[in-house]
Length: 272
Length: 285
Image (cartoon, rainbow over all chains, first blue to last red; front, side):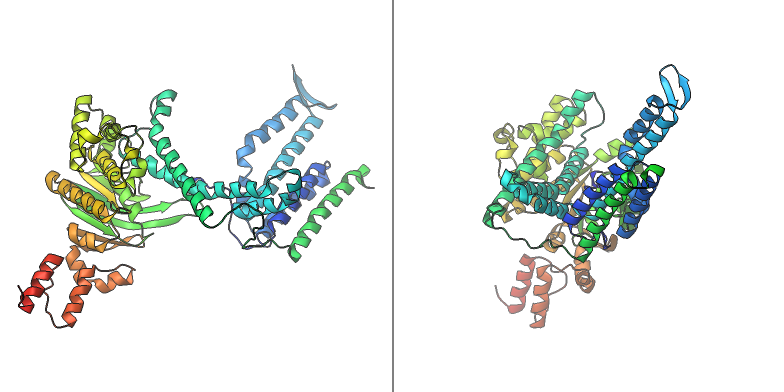
């Protein structure tokens, strides 16, 4: 029942992208997002699509999987497209009826904007597809560490995220079991009005809360027993380390930005 | 009266990269009045199998029937059929939720749509069956009881539905020996007095030998053995050990005694009669 919910969307693999340092992946993803926002002309968008396909190809992810990541936001993408098409600004009017004004510029803008959203979604899901949530958290912790001096509790945030991620599947499993147990005692979660339905959830929620507190308590004792005392002076089993591939990834990210800056403001920009 | 599985296969997370078939073409009939023990190591598919017996999981292929009614159906009959198979999960005390013991045990009967008088009657009977004192405990919070008592309240919550079949997933896990004995005594008396069918998942070969009159061995999503526990432990111990299971200690003890020249008959399966045999053979009183 609930087991079908995949948390995060890590797609196990051993490709070049999978093996990059998480910090590299986060930073290069940010660079590529900047690059996406720089695009304006048709060649720039072509370049971006090529780039996204290239990245997916070297991550050895199924293309369809990455395309599916667009689905949850499909409505917003279509809305963006519709807004630009139907109420867009522009000179070349193709069709007009009352307040609806379809212009060539509007259509072009709509396509660009929705493509931008799709590219953003796809490139950021490559990050989450190739990086397990735990490793991602390590990367975030490491990247936030310099900001500690201005009061960002990097370690504590990362620890909370790690614990939350660790326990979501456990609690889902627990919920599943409780639902089944109460179902086999004839509980009905479907019928009735909202109030009735909410009341019917109590036999699930109460045991779930109790078990969450019990687990939290056990975990606290277990951490205490292993002398956990916060992030100060703590070493890690898996040290993050930049390697040759990471340098290549950074070069790729920066090259993309430089390329798109040239396409927009460079000597050839006027002709495009 | 029987639960039937006809060529049941089950696949988890169908259509995702994590797709996995955990039951392969299982056919099985369990009659009312049987006491079936299911053994198999962790991940063999036992839990998945028992959830098919009361319609919590629906077969990907094949059918699960109770007296001919498909358990996966959406009809009223299917719902009623599912209600006839009670399920006690592992650590059932983790599913307690009500403010009082009475309310928790009454949850099932109320869902059956019984009158308040009948509900009270059911709760009294169920608590008595699991050996808890109605007058002393009914109005107490289930969360203030001891572990063994909590588990019995949870079992009472299923027993109060008066199921024709009762499925128990490791009913004694995590209990101390005293509470363990109590729980088994109550299950056994329930079985004998009400003549219901009991299906019990266990990791203890001793329990399977002592209580069950039929033993199913599940390995890798298949039932590889099905028969009388004593016969299986006697004749197929090599196979049992090959699939990561064991035989009861008493069989090992008998082997050791035989190696020392004491001819203990195969029919001896409990400590009391073993002791009697040893005394007899040694000429002791």
